[in-house]
Length: 426
Image (tube, rainbow, N blue to C red; front, side, top):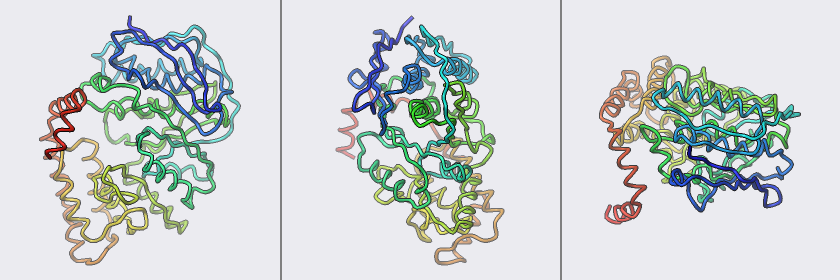
């Protein structure tokens, strides 16, 4: 059986950075970037964390790889509750893909029974619609806000990261919350070959991110005495979609005898969350920026011109809210631009569902925010109510060629120099 062996857990940079020394069998070396081993770095000294807990961030990222690729992970010790939890999480992925053998397993010489002594709350915070909806729901608990550099924003992108942390630190609504920032190469330590473990690409979204994000806070939970963490849902129980963060996965994650994970908002549709944000903002008489966009073309806070921006903008309009007060920059021409962007690229089941929610919301409201011309904008709104966007997205989904996307991905990663040539002639 192919094996990944964790040899040691080392601290550096005044106890803030955890380095993991490991080796892998030759047959699975292709999955790992040779000169970029996994690490995680905090803003505080976490070196007092027991090793059986400090290895959880590492295991949370390599365990799914072991399950899907069929190799074992050998460690000296691990928290007993986490060990039991990862076996249950593995079963959830097995239900999803019963044709896969999922033979890889975690082998530990010692299972350590730890006891966390915490009473504080935390939440994973990205600044988007999902995160703010969860924040509002637990507002009175004053949770610590934890954000990862390396997840949605690449470690190399210092400018966007500085913009993002500046936004969190300066946002008036968040001033009462302690903030914790984590840097980790959780999306860079493995190669494109990991994507090919799936029938279709999408490893981060479909498999990795739920366990990886939650597991990253294990050392913080020990040092900061957290008893729980909330992670906002991306989707809802109204839609069946393969996703790496669900209540069935996230809420099985635990360590230290008592640590709990709450997958929050799964019963809410995305538009329900926008409604919740608009209601809270009106009641508190506060407006705050929603960070929904990570477009490379973004020059403002959000690009205000991608599909994700547009569905958030429209959701606010349908709540009679001015999107320009929530971190966007738009006017009455937004409706034409929405149709332009929706004609580009392929669609997905999840995206179609989000726009269906907006169509249903449009049918249920009599008033909406008007930028300039009520008569013209009402005509556009009636298009949404009559299903024009729904028909457009149905065409995109039916015309999508997933096999072609997979082939493009392989060529782009196996022969990166071709991409450089393509950009020169484009």
